[in-house]
Image (cartoon, rainbow, N blue to C red; front, side, top):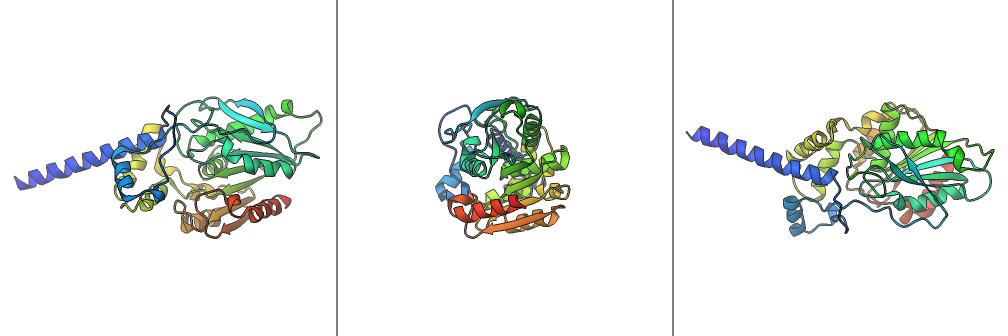
Length: 321
């Protein structure tokens, strides 16, 4: 009798944990059609806020497109398997065009968050394409897969540049390079697009890509000072089931082995969401020419905000090669 009660108790606890994980996975991967701010970063929460977050899930309104850049942009629409993508296109600031940089934002962000980076690429002589990935900004849908389906958006943007970009530029313009620039989720989407979808740019600039989805879930629990096992694994499992893919296979460390493109990998040494071990594994596995630069004391945030000159120098030197 006692064994039966114990078994029933364990099964009930297991069922409740799965229900909680299912709920959190849905909130994490589906944006709400409501105004307002996203829940604070987990590392900034108080103890009471962490408990409330565990009980209610994150507040996850669809990110807006953000303010238009200071430089003139053209609104363009890109056909993607995920639905129409909204993007901004702009030619170089002046002089001969060296190529094009396509920029892909991070989780709960949008194309407007990359305006500063795009402005610098324009000053270097590149046309820029800033993309709202699926579910974000003005793009279709309310769903995010934190890099998996977003890889189809990267491939779609590359196809658009190959077929439609000539219509948006001066006659006789020749683009010599295609650079893919991605931050966090956007960086992982680029890596999957190259490893599994046949995308072949001239070079990559990747900022703080996470190693794999499972480790990312554990990192978020660690940031809240909450044990990850077994809820982190349940969260990854149900997130994949809800969105139609095997989330444990979303693995930038594995993708890196298939990437022969010259790559600049950037990371902040105080990043609570992407560990040193993850970054080292990605860099070690990259199969092509590679450069890495770490920014001391910087977390999961734009590096140019604290190290503007250093960030610009790393990008300029890398592209100069």
